[in-house]
Length: 244
Image 1 (cartoon, rainbow, N blue to C red):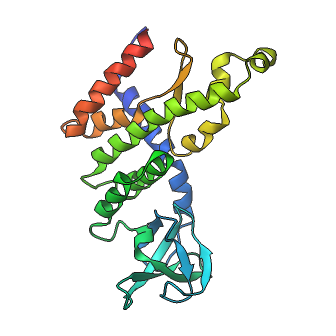
Image 2: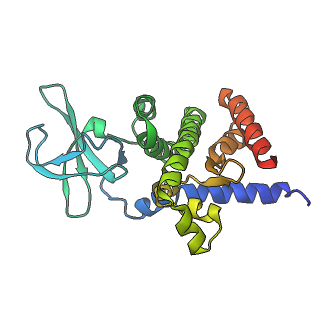
Image 3: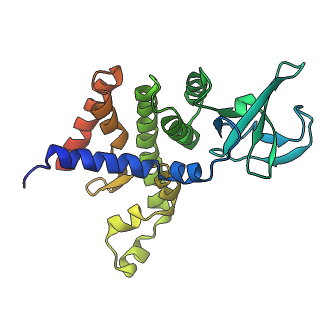
Protein backbone atom coordinates (compact mmCIF):
# COMPACT_ATOMS: atom_id res chain seq x y z
CA UNK A 1 0.00 0.00 0.00
CA UNK A 2 1.32 3.44 -0.93
CA UNK A 3 2.31 5.78 1.88
CA UNK A 4 0.43 9.06 2.28
CA UNK A 5 1.92 12.07 0.51
CA UNK A 6 3.34 14.99 2.61
CA UNK A 7 0.40 17.29 1.75
CA UNK A 8 -2.03 14.59 2.89
CA UNK A 9 -0.11 14.00 6.13
CA UNK A 10 -0.08 17.74 6.77
CA UNK A 11 -3.84 17.94 6.19
CA UNK A 12 -4.49 15.03 8.54
CA UNK A 13 -2.37 16.60 11.28
CA UNK A 14 -4.05 19.98 10.87
CA UNK A 15 -7.46 18.33 11.14
CA UNK A 16 -6.31 16.56 14.31
CA UNK A 17 -5.23 19.85 15.88
CA UNK A 18 -8.47 21.55 14.90
CA UNK A 19 -10.50 18.68 16.34
CA UNK A 20 -8.57 18.83 19.62
CA UNK A 21 -9.38 22.52 19.92
CA UNK A 22 -13.06 22.12 19.04
CA UNK A 23 -14.43 22.62 22.55
CA UNK A 24 -12.22 25.64 23.04
CA UNK A 25 -13.47 27.11 19.76
CA UNK A 26 -17.06 26.70 20.95
CA UNK A 27 -16.17 28.53 24.16
CA UNK A 28 -14.50 31.29 22.14
CA UNK A 29 -17.78 31.82 20.28
CA UNK A 30 -19.31 32.83 23.61
CA UNK A 31 -16.39 34.96 24.75
CA UNK A 32 -17.37 38.01 26.80
CA UNK A 33 -16.40 41.56 25.85
CA UNK A 34 -15.11 44.53 27.80
CA UNK A 35 -11.44 43.73 28.31
CA UNK A 36 -8.61 41.23 27.82
CA UNK A 37 -9.81 37.63 27.79
CA UNK A 38 -8.83 35.23 30.56
CA UNK A 39 -9.71 31.59 31.20
CA UNK A 40 -10.43 29.85 34.51
CA UNK A 41 -7.77 27.24 35.32
CA UNK A 42 -8.22 26.75 39.06
CA UNK A 43 -11.88 26.23 39.97
CA UNK A 44 -10.94 26.02 43.67
CA UNK A 45 -10.39 29.80 43.62
CA UNK A 46 -12.99 30.68 40.98
CA UNK A 47 -15.59 32.25 43.27
CA UNK A 48 -17.15 35.25 41.52
CA UNK A 49 -17.93 37.81 44.24
CA UNK A 50 -19.76 41.11 44.48
CA UNK A 51 -16.79 42.83 46.12
CA UNK A 52 -12.98 42.35 45.99
CA UNK A 53 -12.86 40.48 49.29
CA UNK A 54 -12.48 36.81 50.18
CA UNK A 55 -15.57 37.26 52.34
CA UNK A 56 -17.48 39.06 49.58
CA UNK A 57 -20.94 37.79 48.67
CA UNK A 58 -20.78 34.88 46.25
CA UNK A 59 -22.45 35.41 42.88
CA UNK A 60 -21.51 32.05 41.39
CA UNK A 61 -18.60 29.64 41.15
CA UNK A 62 -17.09 29.53 37.68
CA UNK A 63 -16.13 26.25 36.10
CA UNK A 64 -12.69 25.42 34.74
CA UNK A 65 -12.31 26.57 31.14
CA UNK A 66 -14.82 29.43 31.51
CA UNK A 67 -13.87 32.62 29.68
CA UNK A 68 -14.04 36.03 31.34
CA UNK A 69 -13.07 39.56 30.29
CA UNK A 70 -10.74 41.42 32.69
CA UNK A 71 -11.82 45.02 33.27
CA UNK A 72 -9.45 46.10 36.04
CA UNK A 73 -7.38 44.81 38.97
CA UNK A 74 -7.34 45.67 42.67
CA UNK A 75 -4.87 44.51 45.32
CA UNK A 76 -6.40 44.31 48.79
CA UNK A 77 -4.63 44.76 52.13
CA UNK A 78 -4.25 40.98 52.66
CA UNK A 79 -1.99 40.89 49.60
CA UNK A 80 -4.52 39.20 47.31
CA UNK A 81 -5.19 40.63 43.85
CA UNK A 82 -8.72 40.58 42.46
CA UNK A 83 -9.80 41.09 38.86
CA UNK A 84 -13.09 42.76 38.10
CA UNK A 85 -14.34 40.55 35.29
CA UNK A 86 -17.29 40.35 32.96
CA UNK A 87 -18.73 36.87 32.54
CA UNK A 88 -21.69 37.75 30.31
CA UNK A 89 -23.26 40.99 29.10
CA UNK A 90 -25.34 41.07 32.25
CA UNK A 91 -23.07 39.45 34.81
CA UNK A 92 -19.79 40.69 36.29
CA UNK A 93 -17.97 40.47 39.59
CA UNK A 94 -14.63 40.05 41.32
CA UNK A 95 -12.40 37.04 40.87
CA UNK A 96 -9.12 36.12 42.58
CA UNK A 97 -6.22 36.54 40.15
CA UNK A 98 -4.83 33.02 40.62
CA UNK A 99 -8.09 31.50 39.37
CA UNK A 100 -7.42 32.60 35.79
CA UNK A 101 -4.70 33.08 33.20
CA UNK A 102 -4.66 35.45 30.24
CA UNK A 103 -2.55 35.49 27.07
CA UNK A 104 -2.40 39.27 27.42
CA UNK A 105 -0.64 39.06 30.82
CA UNK A 106 3.13 38.57 30.69
CA UNK A 107 4.21 35.52 32.67
CA UNK A 108 0.79 33.89 32.89
CA UNK A 109 2.01 31.00 30.72
CA UNK A 110 4.74 30.21 33.23
CA UNK A 111 2.30 30.57 36.11
CA UNK A 112 0.00 28.03 34.50
CA UNK A 113 2.97 25.77 33.74
CA UNK A 114 3.84 25.68 37.45
CA UNK A 115 0.25 24.63 38.17
CA UNK A 116 0.56 21.90 35.52
CA UNK A 117 3.64 20.49 37.23
CA UNK A 118 1.64 20.21 40.45
CA UNK A 119 -1.41 18.66 38.73
CA UNK A 120 -2.19 14.98 38.18
CA UNK A 121 -4.38 12.69 36.08
CA UNK A 122 -7.35 14.34 34.36
CA UNK A 123 -6.70 17.71 36.00
CA UNK A 124 -3.32 17.74 34.28
CA UNK A 125 -4.91 16.89 30.93
CA UNK A 126 -7.56 19.61 31.11
CA UNK A 127 -5.16 22.31 32.25
CA UNK A 128 -2.62 21.27 29.62
CA UNK A 129 -5.33 21.55 26.95
CA UNK A 130 -6.15 25.05 28.19
CA UNK A 131 -2.46 25.98 28.05
CA UNK A 132 -2.05 24.67 24.49
CA UNK A 133 -5.10 26.60 23.29
CA UNK A 134 -4.45 29.80 25.25
CA UNK A 135 -0.69 30.21 24.76
CA UNK A 136 0.04 28.93 21.22
CA UNK A 137 3.23 31.00 20.92
CA UNK A 138 4.70 30.19 24.33
CA UNK A 139 8.19 28.70 24.42
CA UNK A 140 6.76 26.15 26.88
CA UNK A 141 4.48 24.55 24.26
CA UNK A 142 6.74 21.51 23.62
CA UNK A 143 7.10 20.87 27.36
CA UNK A 144 3.34 21.07 27.85
CA UNK A 145 2.69 18.80 24.86
CA UNK A 146 4.99 16.26 26.51
CA UNK A 147 3.05 16.49 29.79
CA UNK A 148 -0.21 16.16 27.87
CA UNK A 149 0.95 13.10 25.91
CA UNK A 150 2.44 11.38 28.95
CA UNK A 151 -0.77 11.91 30.92
CA UNK A 152 -2.81 10.55 28.02
CA UNK A 153 -0.66 7.41 27.87
CA UNK A 154 -1.04 6.84 31.61
CA UNK A 155 -4.80 7.34 31.29
CA UNK A 156 -4.98 4.62 28.63
CA UNK A 157 -3.77 2.03 31.13
CA UNK A 158 -6.28 3.11 33.78
CA UNK A 159 -9.14 3.25 31.29
CA UNK A 160 -8.27 -0.22 30.01
CA UNK A 161 -8.63 -1.63 33.53
CA UNK A 162 -11.89 0.23 34.11
CA UNK A 163 -13.35 -0.93 30.80
CA UNK A 164 -12.34 -4.57 31.31
CA UNK A 165 -14.06 -4.55 34.72
CA UNK A 166 -17.26 -2.90 33.55
CA UNK A 167 -17.74 -4.52 30.16
CA UNK A 168 -19.54 -7.84 30.49
CA UNK A 169 -18.15 -10.48 28.14
CA UNK A 170 -21.48 -12.28 27.76
CA UNK A 171 -23.29 -9.03 26.96
CA UNK A 172 -20.67 -8.12 24.35
CA UNK A 173 -21.10 -11.51 22.67
CA UNK A 174 -24.87 -11.14 22.88
CA UNK A 175 -24.75 -7.63 21.49
CA UNK A 176 -23.00 -8.85 18.37
CA UNK A 177 -20.54 -5.97 17.99
CA UNK A 178 -16.78 -6.51 17.66
CA UNK A 179 -15.03 -6.59 21.04
CA UNK A 180 -12.82 -3.61 20.24
CA UNK A 181 -15.87 -1.45 19.43
CA UNK A 182 -17.15 -1.87 22.99
CA UNK A 183 -13.82 -0.65 24.37
CA UNK A 184 -13.64 2.32 22.02
CA UNK A 185 -17.24 3.24 22.88
CA UNK A 186 -16.63 2.92 26.64
CA UNK A 187 -18.27 5.93 28.32
CA UNK A 188 -15.15 6.62 30.39
CA UNK A 189 -13.44 7.84 27.22
CA UNK A 190 -15.96 10.62 26.59
CA UNK A 191 -14.34 13.32 28.69
CA UNK A 192 -10.94 12.54 27.19
CA UNK A 193 -12.41 12.78 23.72
CA UNK A 194 -13.64 16.27 24.55
CA UNK A 195 -10.04 17.23 25.38
CA UNK A 196 -8.87 16.07 21.95
CA UNK A 197 -7.48 12.72 23.11
CA UNK A 198 -8.08 9.69 20.91
CA UNK A 199 -7.43 6.07 21.80
CA UNK A 200 -6.77 2.96 19.74
CA UNK A 201 -7.38 -0.66 20.65
CA UNK A 202 -4.49 -3.09 21.04
CA UNK A 203 -6.05 -6.32 19.76
CA UNK A 204 -3.20 -8.48 21.02
CA UNK A 205 -3.08 -7.03 24.52
CA UNK A 206 -6.83 -6.32 24.56
CA UNK A 207 -6.36 -2.83 25.94
CA UNK A 208 -6.57 0.81 24.99
CA UNK A 209 -3.59 2.92 24.01
CA UNK A 210 -3.11 6.61 23.23
CA UNK A 211 -2.84 7.36 19.51
CA UNK A 212 0.20 9.63 20.02
CA UNK A 213 -1.17 12.81 18.42
CA UNK A 214 0.66 15.15 20.83
CA UNK A 215 3.95 13.29 20.27
CA UNK A 216 3.49 13.77 16.52
CA UNK A 217 2.74 17.45 17.03
CA UNK A 218 6.02 17.92 18.92
CA UNK A 219 7.96 16.28 16.06
CA UNK A 220 6.14 18.33 13.42
CA UNK A 221 6.15 21.75 15.11
CA UNK A 222 9.25 21.57 17.32
CA UNK A 223 11.71 19.14 15.65
CA UNK A 224 14.72 20.75 17.38
CA UNK A 225 13.23 20.90 20.87
CA UNK A 226 14.58 18.69 23.64
CA UNK A 227 11.16 17.04 23.87
CA UNK A 228 11.34 15.96 20.20
CA UNK A 229 13.85 13.21 21.01
CA UNK A 230 11.45 11.68 23.53
CA UNK A 231 8.57 12.11 21.07
CA UNK A 232 10.44 10.19 18.36
CA UNK A 233 11.21 7.40 20.80
CA UNK A 234 7.57 7.13 21.85
CA UNK A 235 6.36 7.12 18.25
CA UNK A 236 8.85 4.37 17.39
CA UNK A 237 7.48 2.25 20.23
CA UNK A 238 3.93 2.96 19.10
CA UNK A 239 4.66 2.04 15.46
CA UNK A 240 6.33 -1.19 16.60
CA UNK A 241 3.28 -2.19 18.62
CA UNK A 242 1.04 -1.55 15.61
CA UNK A 243 3.10 -3.96 13.51
CA UNK A 244 2.97 -6.76 16.11
